[in-house]
Each structure stands twice: as structure tokens, then as C-alpha cells.
Length: 327
Image 1: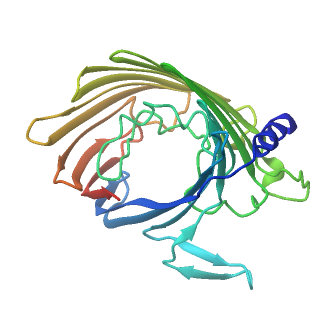
Image 2 (image 1 turned 180 degrees about the vertical axis):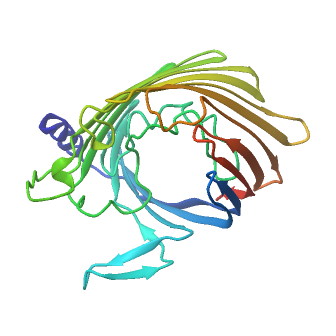
């Protein structure tokens, strides 16, 4: 940890800052979501608005420094007013913790609310479907940390992460570290029981093929809970790909999933996608040994209409239909 922070301090030593650049970007989505867990079923209107505030500058030596803060509202969000400890603003947008970075010559270093190595795997989320982009198979049984779009949970004010990646040719290598309380406050009832999460990942591209490997230790701060992934994808042409994912965990109850997925875009602008996942687990709460989903999307120029219907490992049914867009 100290060595990484010293390396970041050395980068900051480059003198001569150029003109700063501040930009806004983001996305929005809204639509209907249906869920049935076998006991209850409901259809709700889901919507989300996200705005990224990015700022960067570049030194005369070519080192780029920057940061990001995200403002987001997801239907149902509440914000705690800490002035009296028990007041919540209902239906309020949230600002997340900041991420700062430095990058040069293929190297990127982040500190704060960082991306994580496992979560950054290039094809990890390519089995997702629908306007919300979700899957009841693939990675869904596993927990691991990632960039937080909202505030940290209570008790994690002193959480800090570091992330480093290096890109050269067809290879991207990454390393991340999350300390849930860098002050080591033994009296903190939340962070004191969390272990440091350490992750690595590697992506390799060779023509139409993409290969990925990721491993995270103490995932989500859970001691001795490790998650790993082997990923492969083949681009049949510019509009069609198929992929295979093997994702598993090392824990007291081991679970492994194998997922086959495919996506294609027709000349008409209609896109189709599907996945099927099998699971091997010692967890007796699983009802099905498979999960399956199909989806479609249509580009209307500047926005996309998308929908999916899926059945999961716990015999749950999920469906959505809506619109998403980026700006």
C-alpha cells in the first residue's frame, strides 16, 4: 500500500500543468420491470438518471491527471441527513465518492472510489440483456467490489481503493486493492470485520478472439471468499459475437457457473441476444441447475428500445422493457 502511494506521489511531481478540461456525460433509462420469485410478483416503473462530472489536465511531460464524481438517481433512492441521525430525504439523488487518477504511456493509476480489476474484465458483462442490462445467470451468484455509483454504506467513510492497469499491444493487465477502513478503527462495527479485497485481471485480444482471466481474494471484504473467471469471446463478424464464461468461487459453499451467450445486430437495426447458464453448487437453496434468457433491442437513433425475459437459478422470472440513452 505504502509503495503504491509513493509511486502516485512521484507522478504528481511532474511540473507544468496545461489547460484543464471539465466535461459532463451520462445516461438515462426508463421502462417497466416485472419480477416473480415464486411467491410474489410485481410490475414496477423503473427509471434512472446518471451524470458524470469529469475533470482532467495534462502536464508538459505528457502525464494526464483527472478525477470523476458521479451524480445519480435510481428509482427509490433515499439520502440520509446526518444532522440528527434519523432523517432521510425520500427520492433524492446521490453523489458518490470521488475517484482520482493519473495516466501516461499505457499506465493508469487510480485512488479513492476506484474501478476494480475483476469488474473491469472486458467481456464479463456481455451476457446482459434488456434496457437495464442484467442477467439471472453468468456472474449473478457471486459478489465482488466495483466502482460505487452511490455513497459508501454506513461505517465505510474511511474506505479507500487503489487500482493500476497497463495496456500494451493486445494485452491489458490490472491490479486493485480495497481497504474498507484505512484507519484500522477496531471500534468500527462494520469495517472492522471486513478484510482487504485484492484483485487481478488480464485481457488478451487476438484478431476475432478475446480472452480474459480474473481473480479476486476476499471479495467484497469477506474473508476467505474468492471469486475467479475465465472468459472467451469470438466475433463471427462486425455485428455478431458468441462467448463462453466460466465463473466460480472458493468458499464454504462452492458454486460454479458456465454460460454460453450470443449477440447479433441485423441490418434493420434490430439486435438479438440470448444466454444459457448452468450451475454446479453445494448450496441447497438453488432450485434450478440452469438460467436462461432472451432479449431484443432496436436502435432508434440516439436511444435504444430494449427488453428481455429470463428465468434464474432460484426459479425466479424477470422481464423488462424500456428505453436507454447516453449523452
